[in-house]
Image (cartoon, rainbow, N blue to C red; front, side, top):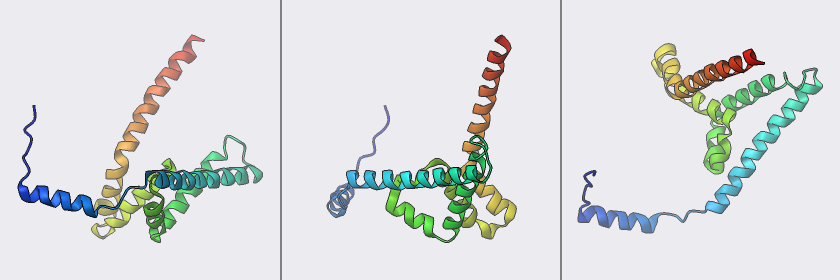
Length: 154
């Protein structure tokens, strides 16, 4: 059993005051905004994918330049300070995997750029991305092994 720290009367009074000043949460409104913004990002991705298909890419190969353009747009908007403003308003809607991940890496790189290229940008950028990259690499390894085992059998 964990030791529970007792709050002092001053802390209790502060917590009560903070609760009265806290704005009400608008869960339904926030969920709708997040859904719409996330959907618009996905619609932009679909538009780009179709555009690349019209420019000669196949259905399978159109995904690569689409992702690259979405990452580029996300990094440009992050660098200009626009993506963070959109994220404050839209909340989780901007956490669509590719654009949200690009924003988090770009933000970390920009925040620590004064420390230099290697220790600042490189080191801090991969603090955010490291876990995702490691998980993706390990998952790809195991999926490859499973795929190889099933390919041998049949």
